[in-house]
Image (cartoon, rainbow, N blue to C red; front, side, top):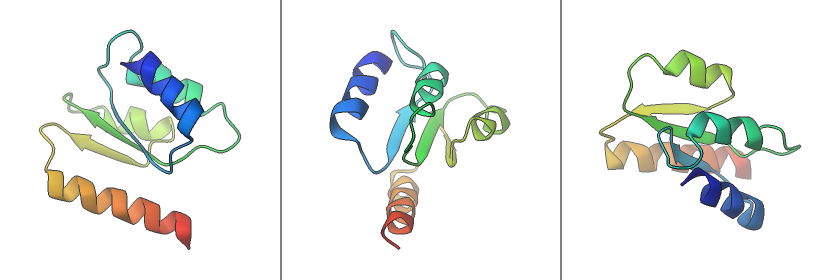
Length: 88
């Protein structure tokens, strides 16, 4: 749920955002637009079931785009790499 996710983002200020582009009440594109209006935006990993969305998502500032179904091990590796960048 995009609205719930936005509230969690505002309350918790996560180090990395993992989101699906297709969410109820607010889709991932609208979510990204709202989050990117902030001064500090954590890296975003976007999951999509639609091939060909990578260019659009990257133009919005998404660091990683994964096509569903997602390999859990690869996803964890990407999350670890993004959080490591934040520590350095």
